[in-house]
Amino acid sequence: MSDRTLTLDEVHALATRVLRHNGCNADNATAVADVITAAERDGCHAHGLMRLGGYVASLKSGKVNGHAEPTVEKIAGAVVRVDGDSGFAPLALARGRKALIEAARTSGIAALALTDIHHFAALWTEIEPIAEAGLCAMACVSYKPAVIPAGGSKPLYGTNPLAFGWPRANKPPVIFDQASSVVARGEVMLAAREGKQLPPGVGVDKDGQDTTDPNEVLDGALLAFGGHKGSSIAMMIELFAGALIGECFSFEAAQRDNNDGGPPSGGELIIALDPNLFGDSEGWAVHAEKLFAEIEAQPGARLPSARRYGNRDKTTSAGVPLSTAVHDSILALCEPSGSA
Image (cartoon, rainbow, N blue to C red; front, side):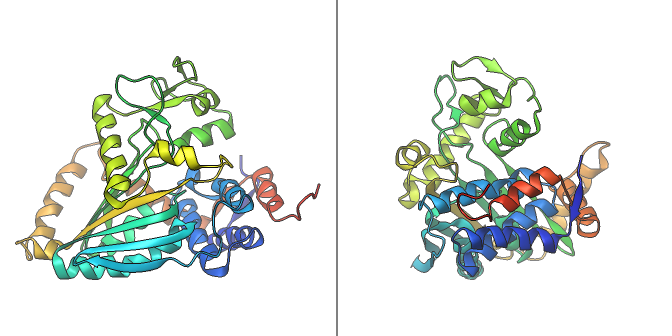
């Protein structure tokens, strides 16, 4: 039960305050706060304010550069590379997005490779601006080992989400953002914090036994969705966000991580496509709407992201519910070291 309600401006100000207090400069703090606020706005609380503890831990340990200055380089006709300078991903993404969009509009398809970043958020916040610019987009990122490969017994892959966005005329884009695991690790963390059980089939404990206890899953491993199919997608993402762009695999990220509770260092790949340059510049959008209409015509069916947009409308006017305990725990992140 919530004890208070924050406006979106208050969420952003709170997140910015915590990040600035703990070592982020203005640009980095604002970029991360933008992502946290978007998550709370759209009802994705597992990627919102609850992540501040992890952000702060990685700043305090010195793993993340709170004053990072990401640099953008065009390394091929349609390939843009951003060196994240060991900072959080949002600022690197913000600085590389314009070059990606311009390259896609020139070549029809373009890729953005982000390296030396620390990614700790949902992918849809990164895909949505690209789709709003009229482009189709896909993004993928790895993490630390949390998912067992099909037939295996030990975590090897990250939860390895894949996001996709499709632009629409005069409507918000259609976007999905889904982990290669049955659920995202953030959802398990949220269940553990709220004392809730998980559905059967989500994960196993450290001995490989099925469990619905989120704390045991956090100590054990998640399962890939769809068995070997989800496992194959997780492997693909390891290759795209790792080997392809000269970054680490999830198991390598774990080997070099200091386990401070924050995000490990790694890479991300984003691909953007201009639908106007694929041979049907006048009909692609209308044709796509026929598919969306058929989906929505079925009782109970909805387009991906429709729930988020509904939450967005409500939260923009009603605000973000937050318990006093959670609010106080966030404020504690701004207390001087050693405070009671």
